[in-house]
Image (cartoon, rainbow over all chains, first blue to last red; front, top):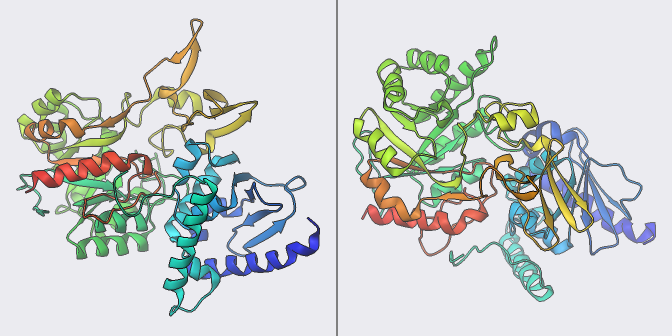
Length: 167
Length: 324
């Protein structure tokens, strides 16, 4: 993919990242020393990846066409819908890793710190989009419903059961 | 139906759930846990795991939240204080008491003694990390330091638990679900040998900083500080590299040399544990990801790991049945 088509994605990703950080200012402190690490987020079914640098004074999320030339401490790889589900609390990271639906490489402690920080933040998709509170619950519900149907249609791992408790 | 009980007079078993983070604490309380246990984000906590645990403000908020819903918060200060740096442990105890903790879970004799004198009214529980597993050992802590409850190692049989409980020195807490540690907890020499670190002082027996996974051909290798603990062919579920549960080549065979990777699940012996005189059931797993409470009113503690979903749900349900 050429550089040009990544620009809108870069703009949107950076904006959403800033929104998430603004809503969850404690995330960086929860990461501790791992906030200084560089995380490669690799949606394996997409022609781009992300470099996440959560350091408190200059947090940054960068879209890159390939990880080949990138330096990073840890790589987290899975299909995009799975990664989005992790961000949204629809998946348990441990379970995905143990079933081999998620791959991690590099600094395991940094990955666990990031996992725990994201999980504690309870990130809401509408928050990340920067939507006003009046419409946020509706948008989040619609997003989650759409994502769940997409995951089912594409054969992604089943989400954590939030409803029946029958697992 | 939940019957909240007052410490010292309870007739039913208390369900205690792990809270690795504030959101896990809230979820466990919402799901009906009688108590949660948690710790600070520092070396006073034997589960000092990356990205987990509480700062002072988060603990205050968590205790207030739990108390508003009639749940208790037990704060684990269960590491052994470093020589020359006792102040960190003192400050943690002061912060926990100030936040309103219902009990301190402590292992270090010096800290128990200090806390007992500094906060004579504060309830103290003896952590499993203290490895007190006999009547004389438990009596020592009770008689000299006023310990009100002991958390027993998870390798004891029900008969052994009953014999300890029959002495009546203090309340008895046992693990109801989680990993099954066969070593003296927090003192695993196997782990110390492999990592050069203390399982008590460095978070867990397999510190994440020493864990590495590598895809090698069709195998995923799980390593702890360079030691290959297991290899998983494609399609086979992987696991966290825990030394005692690894597969090793030994005598020409590849096998689980120390123990099968079996978890502790007491669901079938809950009635026996209650008859044995157990006061409280602890679900292990502050380092696990969140699971989710169901909508059917079952008392599922959300703070337990996804892998534990079914068993924790069943244990929670069984405990609630005994309260009816």
